[in-house]
Length: 43
Image (tube, rainbow, N blue to C red; front, side, top):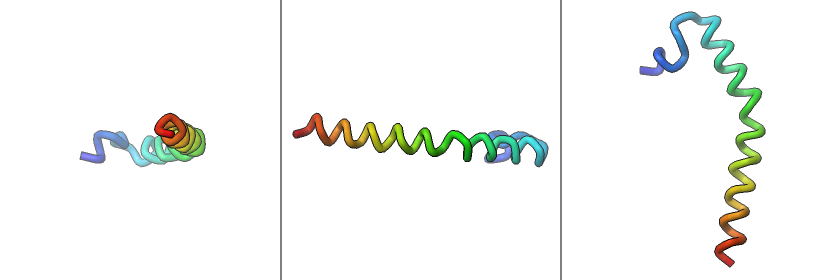
């Protein structure tokens, strides 16, 4: 199941994981901002 997500070759999997790690901080910031936004709108 996970293999289809990562691709067949180990190089592709490494590339995929590397790109995930590069984009993760931005994603985390967006999620945190979204949570703060929802919390503010509730008040």
